[in-house]
Image (cartoon, rainbow, N blue to C red; front, side, top):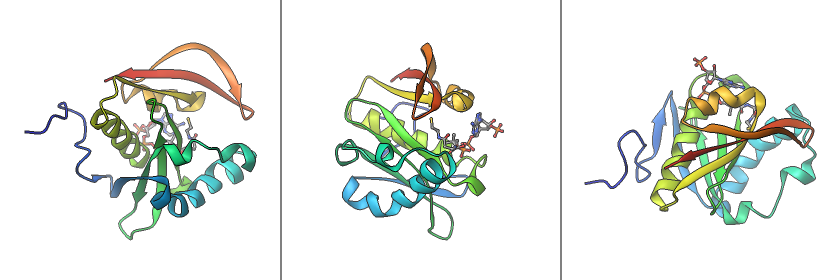
Length: 157
Ligand SMILES: CC(C)(COP(=O)(O)OP(=O)(O)OC[C@H]1O[C@@H](n2cnc3c(N)ncnc32)[C@H](O)[C@@H]1OP(=O)(O)O)[C@@H](O)C(=O)NCCC(=O)NCCS
């Protein structure tokens, strides 16, 4: 019997929703696969400085690698050891089809698997509804990070 709670995707299985397949990997495996997505979305599209996009937490994190039906990597996100989720990015043509939701579910499931009691993230304010749909609740004031308005959110597991 799986210890994973009802409604949470089993982390032992790759998540396959909306035509994307999500696996969880360490940075050594994920780096070359997910960095092009992060560069496209954060650096080129959102104007985040490349030196901010890269940090030392990647090597400590678990990473979601989401592939479309042809095997191309189209979305990613990461889970830090303390339960913080970040670097959620879906290539623009793939948005609104469930890829981001599949990545988020896979990261939450990984947090459950690791025995964490909750997950947290700093949401760009335009994406608050996206995270609310996945059980995250905002707290605190809006703040600026990399020139983008954010709000802290958390979800108990
Ligand atoms: C935010 C993001 C990760 C969502 O991924 P996605 O694959 O588009 O999301 P999904 O398709 O799983 O879910 C989309 C749903 O969330 C809702 N939503 C709310 N705000 C949204 C937003 N800013 N972007 C996308 N969807 C949003 C949509 O209404 C949609 O619901 P619908 O299907 O009923 O229309 C993606 O749009 C993205 O990479 N954006 C650019 C980078 C970014 O802002 N990252 C977030 C950093 S906090």
